[in-house]
Length: 284
Image 1: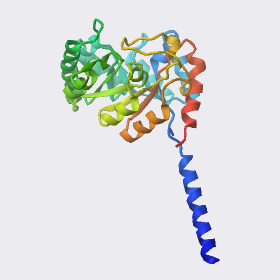
Image 2: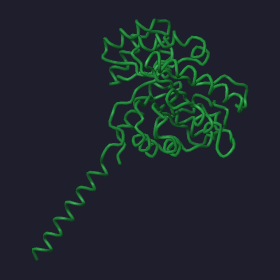
Image 3: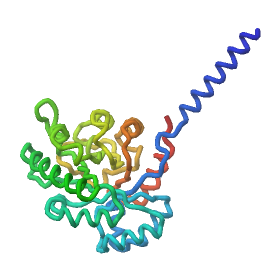
């Protein structure tokens, strides 16, 4: 009888442990925000938009535009609100032709990362486009790292996944960019849209992805490799086609450092709070 009671106690403890483990949050932190999500608001009033984000609990920002202000002015506004900029997004021409200016602005903002999200090209994206980008990214990435202590990241945009040899042009870019100087920001919508599995891609290159754009794609929308889709197809996280729990689990294992919500929809101000609520409700 004592043995039976002891066994029942062990089973009860084990069940409780499993239940506790299954209810652990997948995403414990407050996500960051890409300034592009609130671009219309930022273009009118940077300070007021930061007030709105601060009231929501957002601290981590990725600025991809200075919105008519200087980097020093934005840094001051962030400091006053106990917020920070971890990544600074710039255009491809500025990365290549104004590397020193980009670095100075990034450091003034307090960013550790410099990001580019689009490679100029005539569709379809081809091997020559990839090779040009590889050379430019390796060169600029080396300057940013060795002379300024900054890490360059390329943000995929969907058109890089054309088949090439035994993989894709994106695989080729991964292989040919120097990991000491070139890292990546995975945009999960622009990974899924051309037919790739974001979680599998993170698993394939766990050491290369440092940043993530959190987005979801409206159900029923079919993808392609254009790198574009109507903005209305950005939906509240968890209501679209992407397997967010699987993606975030892979991201946590890989050690991705910063997660930014990017919602391009016209009703971003309605969708963002719901996306945050979804993320914080995810459990193992």
